[in-house]
Amino acid sequence: MKNFILKLMLLCCIILFNISCSNKSNIKLIPVKSDEKWGYINKKGEYVINPQFKDADFFRDGLAKVTGPDGKVGFIDEKGKYKIATQYKDATPFSDGLAFVVNDGGYPTCIDKSGKTIFTLKQAKHVTSFKEDLAIFVTKDMKFGYVDKTGKVIINAQFDQASYFCEGLAAVKIKDKCGFIDKKGKIVINPQFEIVSDFSEGKAFFKNGKQYGYIDQKGAYVINPQFDRAGQFSEGMASIMSGKVVGYIMEDGKIEINPQFDFGGEFKSGLALVSQNEKFGFIDKTGKIVINPQFEDASSFFGDIAFVKSAEKWGVIDKEGKYIVNPQFDNVIQNFDGFFYVTSDYYDASAFISSFFKKAGDNLFDGFNNTSTLQNVVDNPIYSNLNAESQFIAYTLDDQIMTNDILITTTSFHFTNPIFENITNYSSYYGYSYETGTSKQYKFSETVSAIEYNLEFSNEAEEKGGAIASALKSEIESRYNLNMEIKENQYVALQDNKWSFAIFYDDNYCSIIIAFNKAKLQEIINTKSELIDESEL
Image (tube, rainbow, N blue to C red):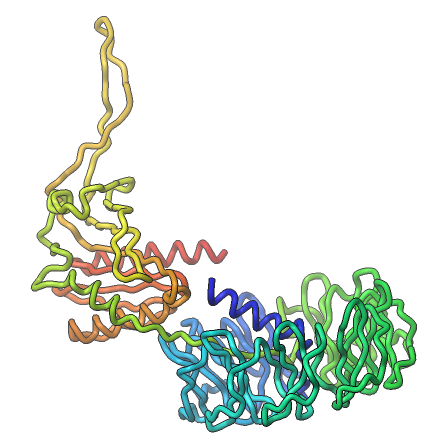
């Protein structure tokens, strides 16, 4: 719940401050999705980097953030070559030569374009990318501050919410009111507004009461509150809403294009994205429709191109509305700008590791090994309340408390051979025999092949599945002198004539398997992989 609240606060930053501190984007390569994989095309629609990624982003500072088949994040150059291998749980795009990354179980860490660590922010719960030489960080007590490119705290964490610096000022929220600070943290426009935007072309919009207006960088009203909604200035004009329709004003606040559209975006390259009757098109600065509303969805123009969606597929058009690349892609990234951040994955799992591995003994785990039978499991008071729905698994739902934050909620014992047979029961009545149902006849001499523990997280362990899995991996590798293979959301070590191990995880889940039989563990892995594949269809 705490992590959800923090993410919600970061989302509120976008809403309250209307973050759009624009970068000047020069797009050479376009990330596109086809058949569940992302690749890159040029402006002619030709693939420069073939589809191969689970996710992809625009190139920034010469590198693009991508997610590899293993679910890990890395960075490629414009030839598709990895400059920083996929290894991170998450990362921001590069900005001014720096990016923030997070490893499973790690703190937000700033790296350069070679992958070298510049600094680590152990005090930060969230950190954004750099804008105007500063990055926002959020502490565990939900306060926002700023650090510079050396990791030095320039403005202490003290604000309830905060935005990027744009044109030298940043919007902040203090006690439900928004104002602006300079790069020394000095309040230059007192918190007094309900909602504000970042500054763009010397103006920021604000909301007080029911209406929106605009202020300058001294906080003076330059356009009085009079609109039902407002957008940022771009290329000398801003969108405004009157009632339920959108028009455009000039810098003096005079309406240049009468409100008439259902939606109106910022002017980019002389054109603005608008919608009418649930279709998207483009207008020029006189309000003339130059590309008729005809698309299901569309982006603003990036220089001389825009992305449009037609018949559920995305293509690329020029400023005359002609297709450069016919609609054929499943998805594109519509916005270059954004509020990019990473979240700390650090969790001190040492108490859990100590508690869990009390189960480890000489040639035994939890009191069992490859000679242990179903009868031995039943005789163990911890596992006496067993269930068996599958012929190859016996399990208990009785909780085992590992720490205040982590429980074992299900323990499953896997067997190579069936542990019961379904026996048909009969009864008789005046000499006639008839079926009355079935019952299970257990085979208590069958031996255990693997033990699986499913974990549940709460409090500080919430959403820390990756950190806990990483701690388990490190302990297993150290304790049993082996190396676990890293796969997507799993670690595996298959060994002949020795115990084998597997860890499956995501942010909210972790399962660890100790197997006395390598073949059985491989069977379990295959079954779980099939279930994951089916769930993604």
